[in-house]
Length: 116
Image (cartoon, rainbow, N blue to C red; front, side):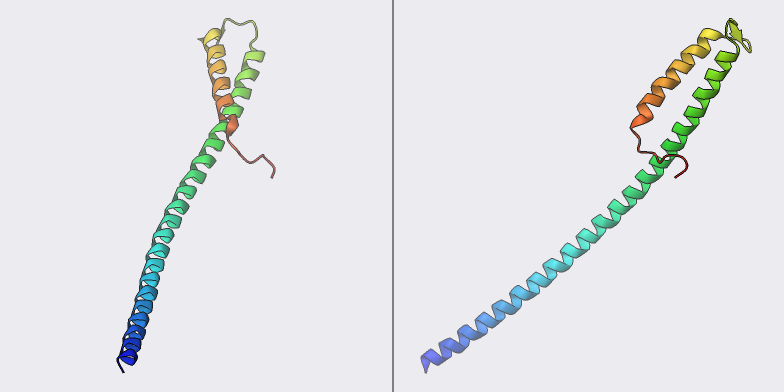
């Protein structure tokens, strides 16, 4: 009879340990799910912000392209004049050079092409 009691006790202990392990696993999975969901939502917010920043930078780059083109047209139209609208030509040329440097730095942006 003592062996039977030992088996019943061991069986109950084993069952209790198994139930406890399953409960601990479920709690761990629930906490992990919640933590990962929070991370996914945070990353989603970051992605949205970065997409807005990229869109605004692409708009700035497009505006800069137009400005560079208009300035070049102005410089070509007033070739030989020491001043353009009262501004020394060298100032406009230097500003154009700075705009071109900025434009080169914005070249890395993956902006969508026009017409697509």
